[in-house]
Image 1 (cartoon, rainbow, N blue to C red):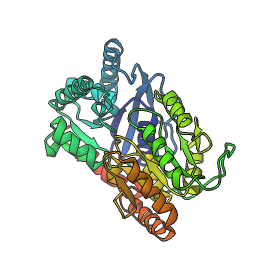
Image 2 (image 1 turned 180 degrees about the vertical axis):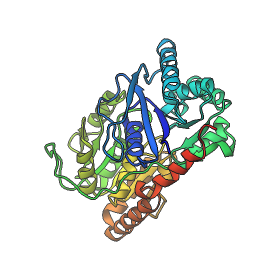
Image 3 (image 1 turned 45 degrees about the horizontal axis):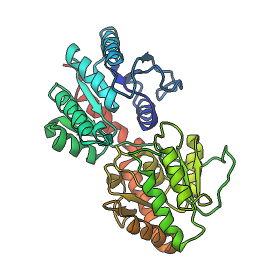
Image 4 (image 1 turned 30 degrees about the horizontal axis):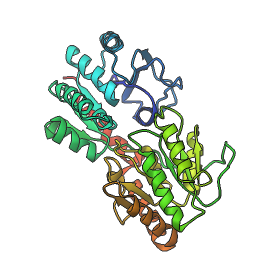
Length: 376
């Protein structure tokens, strides 16, 4: 029996890249063959299947921003690849991957699953931009494709805002391997032993300005509070504004900004931290919080898409509504002061991870989704 051929198309950066690697590295290699089409300026790191065999990868003119000429070129290139490879299914990842995959799937009569990993219209900083991005998504929803959401919140948006019928809105939670080994740091440790942490580039989505303001309030009760913020540097449009705010609030000695951090170092830093926080305005299903759950960390997060799917209020952490910095800081202080409550949340975090976000336990559900949506 020949293998089922899945063609993945995406702008392969950040969490989208992490998601794809986890999928192709855990699919049954005896039943599925993966092929990847990614941007030319994306990561150069090879992709491997579960047998550690390299995966065929094509580079294309896929970029994050809307660029009619490059996007048209990418569509033509993808169409050529689809004609040549004849995949049984296209799995499109990210906003741009979705546009390309849905376009070519429509032309070539190939079924398409789209995983947005946070809808593009959520990133719009104006009503006009949001309206444009949402209109584009609604237009493509009318073609013959399905959403494969990375979280329940994302699936709800697909149905309630974009207009997908419920039967065309599927769900596969982002999942990771259990983190069994914590390596030593590969970078110099320049922060104190007692600290809280987060992963997030200074941007509209991650809302790091709010995080800095929260820390200033925590400092009123705990002068030695320290935040280690990882993932700063790549595509961080608000970095200078964040640095200015840190200076204005006299927090230079209370925050460490790590511009580049290997994945193993992130695991080490999260594991050694007192707790994990997120002030994001929206997410798909954030891997950094999934990793925090796997490492049994209590979390304090905003009530954002993705965050609310991972943190159950007063069970494995606290969920803060309306970007309330006063309540956010209060909950951080509560966990830092109440060891028994923190330990309870930590135990619940590990149990929830194993039940819902351990890819060893979830990959079979994705394989079934693929099998149920193949070209007839």
